[in-house]
Length: 387
Image (cartoon, rainbow, N blue to C red; front, side, top):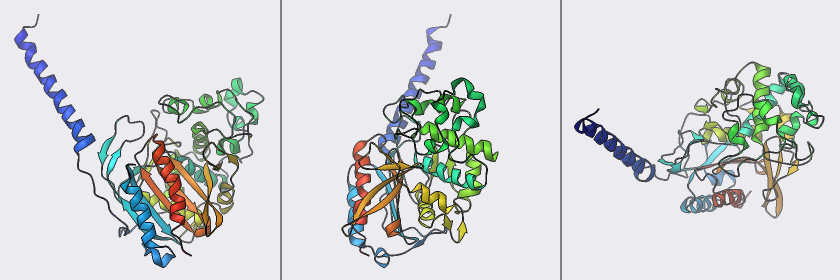
């Protein structure tokens, strides 16, 4: 039997450790100093971007600055806004704030700047679509008209006649018809992708709620299968294929693709990169798959990715090939934009008519007011474009 005087020091030690942990958590969450706001002048980095005054690119610099400053002044926890036109950075803003990494339940205060990677969440879905287009050009993945179950003969036990109609294109368009809950609670179907070993069986094992190719239903499981097809066809993990075929050619070197518990990069929400590098993907799309004179993504794939296919449950936005499409008004005329969206305020907008791309990052996960404000931002920035 332990004597009381022997257990007392152990209890004191545990109490001290708990107090220290509580003090650290309080500091990290509420007191840690973070970087002040910077902008609008872009940082001078040797990463392939040139900078140019907004006015020289046909933009009212004062109006643009007022728009972005107003956004940062609001209690929305926005971390960055970057704008480029004609291949030149015209505005780059950052500020520190609360953030949490993917699948973390605790937010802490963090500093942000031009050389800090940020979670871009579901914009990774749009990047995965680009990778599928590259792999398709190389003949490494099935054509988009291919029934998905044809690639998984081991799933014969769940291959009903209706499910055999699901094609790769249905996965790309998020119109596979499967019952799927995502983004509407802590426990949803997407969360299971983190630990399920057999992703195709898990995703395709869901019941059908509508006919394939008939209606949009947001489904990150389809993206996970696209990544699996890329890995099977190329013989490379998704992140290694992305490195060699997309990121290195774009001069993107500082990035991470967070993996699930089985070591697979999470195509649907695990990509982390610098906002400046995400903006390069916008410029790549605006230049029809070219970067500094080199072909990276097939032009036909990008053209098809910008076709708005299915109505969504977000405003008047449409969806196709893992990209969102909406419209803005410019000089009284409607113009299309295309975008990758990520939870928390991550946005990559491209506006082909104006040869412009916009990136935002934020830490407002599952916060509707921030999503609304950032969805409005594209129109506000378009309003600052004079010619």
